[in-house]
Structures are given as structure tokens and as C-alpha cells.
Amino acid sequence: MLLHVTFSFTPDEEFAAVEDIDLLVGLQMEDPIPGSEIGPTAGCIIAKQFYSAKFGDRFFWEHEGEVPSFTTDQWNSLKQCSLSRLDNSDITRVQKNAMLLPSIKNPEVPCEEIPEIDLSPWKESPAA
Image (cartoon, rainbow, N blue to C red):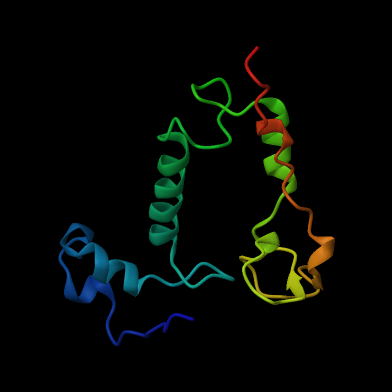
């Protein structure tokens, strides 16, 4: 959790114009968006970065029609699997979405309930 600091001055008391405020200082001075730890400017910057990372990468796995794209069967197989299914320890229960803390909406379930990836769409037929 980020620490939200209350400043003893307002920007218009210390700066002649908003352009005089350094970006990092301004980000720290912004009030957070309700339900968030960051303000609107940081939220916008992060959203633009994620957008650029996804749509600026022609190899991003969800893009269709690019070379090399996944086939429909491969794409469907990838959509059915989850990071929670990675078998790299002796755990027996895991939350459905590994990137979120367990909760009522993201309950822990037996590992066997998390679908395994079906690798058959990647099987190459032997050359004749």
C-alpha cells in the first residue's frame, strides 16, 4: 500500500504555473482516484503504457492475423489455461486467479479444478 502524504501547501501557493511542477512531485501530490492508490495522471500514464505494450507488439498473443499468429484452436487452448495451474510446488490448493489475493470472488480451489493447457493444437503432423 502506498503512503498518501498530505501537503501543508497548495500548488498555487508554491508554483507560478502548473507547468513549473515536476512530474514526479505532481504525481505524489495528486489525490488518489477513489478505490486506488494513484491519482488520475499516474493512472493515465500507466494505462497508456499498457496500451502501447499490447498494441505496439505485433507478437502479442491475442493479436490475430499477424505472422506468426496462433491458430484458433491454439488461441482457445491458451484462453482456457491459468497461471494458477503452474505445477512448480507441492501446493494442493490455489486461488483461481494467481495474480489476485484469495477472496470470495477469487476463492482457493483444489489444484485439480484448474484446467491444464491442452497442447494438442501445437502437435505437428509427421512429414510424409
